[in-house]
Length: 280
Image (cartoon, rainbow, N blue to C red):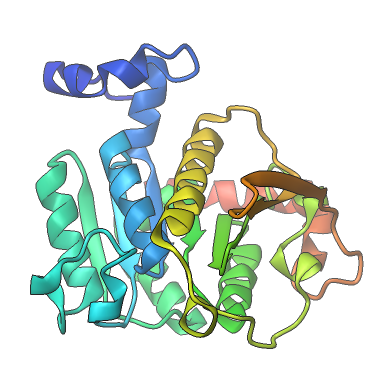
């Protein structure tokens, strides 16, 4: 049974609830959702702050790095007092303070299949969210090998993945959804290389460019959860110099080694649903 919003929550999220696409039911859906954010840097700090404010009820922050002085111009959850401390700890503390409605779990880990499998197996609420399709993964990392690894795990588990990246004055965004939009394929269908791409460490980046892409990633996440104008089958590309957006239609690569098993998705999905009786 869906829990009703209490009076305090109704007041806090009132301006969102006024939107017919959200309403009380939609706000409760946001509060019930679980999101794993991988990479708590420029994108990750902005995204985590915005999703916390909008009322996403359960956040899981994953990053193994510490705060450096060079992070401060674009990683907005940190200040000078955070330098040398773990990013996930600093971010988690700020988010819990800013919205007491949400739960924030932090993991000082580099993403790997082993870590992801352990997290899903050992966290009972996260496991329930996975079974009930109330789990989304956000890729906020800054290198292609990690993106491909995250994509491979999400593709295997059929967990929705929203991936964003920024390099120089260019940003990219796409939604990978094996359940509702398998025909659009996965990250590997678009970028089928493990080679390192340019990152902000080598190319440079402006904080406002990161903020724009992070806001779009957060907005896309909320739309995905509330099923507003979905599915999204495009690779969205932003040029910060001209302020232009363009989009490229994505389609599944029939030979993709990562998402080939999505072909018979409709036959496989009930197996995942059947787990609900054992987990609820």
